[in-house]
Length: 91
Image (cartoon, one colour):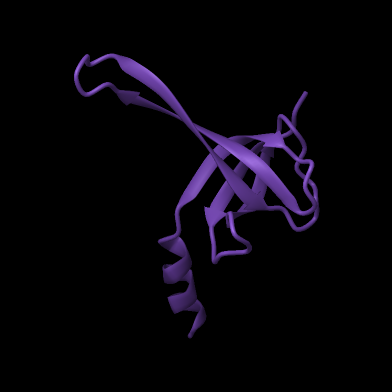
């Protein structure tokens, strides 16, 4: 595959931004992804969250950091995401 084709394939991968809630595992962080949706019956704004296990090769992310994760090939039973960048460090 050429570089241009590789870039197109990578462009289709899902990218999410979330907050690290756990960094106790080796080379893995748990990232909470928050989203706001409308309730189908009551038409009320509802907050929903999901937790993703993401690969952090350098163990750089810490609890409270805002990170950007990208979909990738399965790394383990639960890891299908990897940390692309640390957007903001925890204070």
